[in-house]
Length: 225
Length: 248
Image (cartoon, rainbow over all chains, first blue to last red; front, side, top):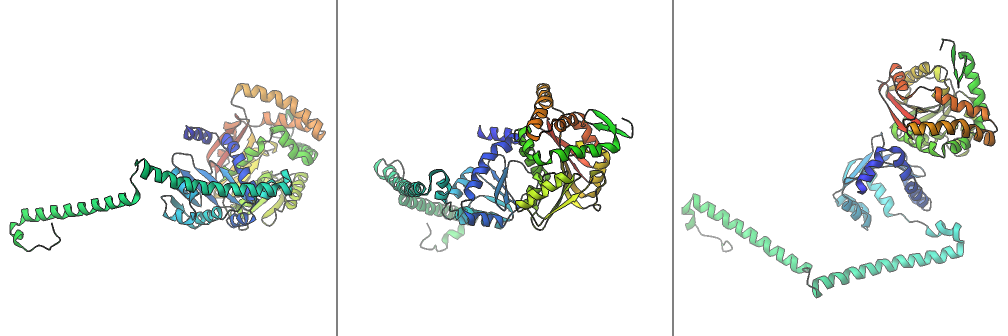
């Protein structure tokens, strides 16, 4: 549904560009409140990054000296193309160490991979000054109080979600017993692996005996079945 | 149209007089040009120009000619993309428009990789094979001899370079065409009168758009100028078309 809507958008560059304007404006407004990020992006000004997610149309990100520009079509060849599934990009967005996640993920990178890693680091180190962002609307004092509250809310959200994740895991594994606990599953998998290896060895031995029955008289190592 | 006659809006004038008449129009509107563009197009001209940049394929280090660049909308964006290793030439035949563009860009800090040249599109003062990309946005219809101008642009393009012509064109939807006629012959001169105190210039704008070649004709003209892989893309139901061609 979303994918077909986006495909229709791409077919009409006017609509596509119009649809991207609010996103671009928002991103650039946020970037203006992190001068370090703007400087890091400006070091790559003029270069073009293409992000391809699953069946969605490609998103082109032009890096500029004062932010970024988005488009859904571009005739210039991209300096780097990042191609992957939505799950890969979600994992990248959530990762604490995004550069490592990018290198170890299934996201394909064609072109200047250093550029994509540099950009990932910019996103990783993004530190938006939220207080400065809302200060023109609320005034300094209220902005500071709001900023404090929002930061507290984020901290609480992070802690609470981590606690709920642990509690949910415990409930599913221990109370409801709907999911096998990790260590048990690992032990079981290890036993299955050993059994598989043993059966492979047995199969190989039987094949050898069929070819040369006299080999049955040869002494066998103790650990062979 | 005889050899020494041409259109100036709906009027037929001597070819050698058109250039001066068009110059008068742009001397008159230069100061309010950007405000009027936003008003007349409801800001959509920014999207048209943005798509032109996306379709230009311009890259860092490229040399770009923004012909009839006026107040420098495209030059500004190109300057950011080509960076210090590239360059943009903002050219316009009209000194008033060029002055407005140069002052505006300089005031905004766009310096270092931009040159300003007062030039006639029909005989561009550049060496052959000089530019990677040439754009002419809302300028070709004001040129007296369009074929000559297109040949001149093809000459200064590098082989493989591309020409982009962004220009008003013929609406593809009959309903849109009627609404557009009504808008451009009533609302435009009125806005010109109120904002720029000049209704005649905006009457000329509406008339010159009607006299400009339609999409297919302009495409043929570009092919005749020696460009290949010529194509066009209609925007806003054909009110504006972006033509592209590549120098072989």
